[in-house]
Length: 135
Length: 402
Image (cartoon, rainbow over all chains, first blue to last red):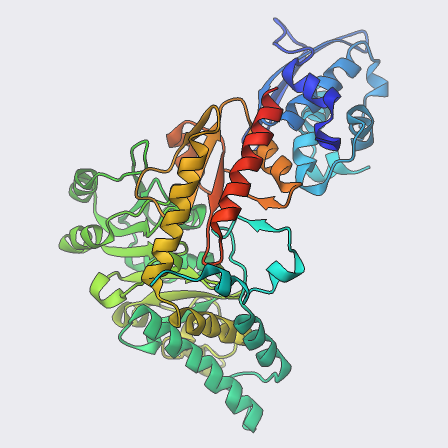
C-alpha cells in the first residue's frame, strides 16, 4: 500500500508519540471532525514562550491520529513565535506524502487543534477550518 | 424469473467508461441507465419553460413535465397527479412538510422521530422545535434497529402527537419499520405519518393508498434517475390545507399591490422554474424500472446482501450491524480499523464503499460507534463485485492491523 498509508504514518498510528494528558497544562483544546467522529484533545505546557510539553488523546482514523502524533513530536521544545499560524504545509512536510481533498480534514485535524489551542493561549478567537487550511 | 443483471448492467454507460469500477455505494446515489441520460439530454436539447409559452416547444415541455407527474402518480399508485409535488430533493420535500404543514398544523404538539432516521428527517423537526413550534420526541430502536410497537404506543399515549416521521428503510442498517402498523396506530390517535422513502422506494413497490401514509418523500437520484429532483406525495386534503413557502413565479393565481392568491396544488409549492429536464429523467427512470420484474430485483438484491454478510463473516474482527432481513445495504465495523481508512484504501482499487455516519448520527450513537462502513447494492450489482469488494476489505483490514 502506497502514499498516504506509508510505513512512517502507520508507525505513528500504531505507536502514537506524546500520547496521554498533562497533569496541569497551560492550555488545552479539543477539536472534533464531525463528518467521521475523529476527536483530538491537545494539552500544551508553555513556559517562557516555549512549548515545553505536548500531550494528546484522541480517537479516529490512522491519518488523523498519525498526523497529530507527528505534529506533537515536532512541536515539543519549539519557541511559540515559530508556531504562530502553522500552515498545512508544515503538516504535509511531516507526513511526507500527498494529501487528497477527501482526507484534508483527517490530516489537518491535529493542526486545527494546535492552532486553536495556541489562539486560546494568546487570548484570540478560534479560527475556522478555512483559516487553518489557508497555505 | 431471475434477473439478468449482466444484461441490465450493459444499459449503464458508466461501466463502459470505468471498466474497473466496483460500485458498491448505490444507497448514496445510483448509476443511471442510458434511457435516463437520453431523456434528460432530449429535454435540455429542446428547452422551453413550462406553464408559460404559447408556442409548440413550450407546450411540449409542459406536457412532458405534467406527464412526468402522472408517471410518478402511477408509480406510487396515488389517487391524483396533483398529490405529487416536485422538489429539488427528498430533503426539500421533508422540509416542505415541516414548514408548510407542521409549523402551522402541528404547532404546540409533538413530532415523533425514530432513531433510524437520516438527518434529513431529523433536522427539519429539530428546527421547528428550536423555534418553539413543536416538541420532538424520539422513538428509540434496539441494537439491531428494531422499533418496538409498545414504545410507539407509549409515546402516543404520553404526548399530543401530531406527526410520526419514519423511514421506510434505514440507509444504514437496511431494516424496514412496520409502516402499516405505525400508520394504523398513529391514525388511531389522529396523528399523521410522513414516510421517508428515499431508500425504500428503490427496493419495494409502494402503494400510497393501501399504505394510507399522509406524506411520502423520495428523490430521483437513488432511483436510477437524475440529481436535482425529489418528490413529495401528500394527501390532497392535506396539501390543500397548506400555505406555500417559496414565493415566486408559477405558485400564485393573482398578484396585487398588497397580496396574492396562491395557485392550486401542486403548483402552489413549485415556485420558480422547475427541474423540467430532471422531471423527464425521473419519468424515464420509472418507465425503465416498470419494464423490470421488481420482485426479481428484490430477490437479486437480497441474494447480494446475503452474500455480503456471508463474506464478511470470514473477515477477522468484523461485526455486521445490519440484522437478518435487511435489504439494500449491509453496514459493518471491523475491530481496530477506522471506516475512513478502510474506504480510502479499497477506494484505490476502485472499490466504492461509504464510510462515516451516513447522515445518521443518532443511530450511530445508539449503536455505540462513531462511524461504520456500508456496502450497498443496486440492480446492476454482480455477485463477483461483492466477492471483489470483500476480498479488498479483507486485504485492507489485514494491512491496517498489521
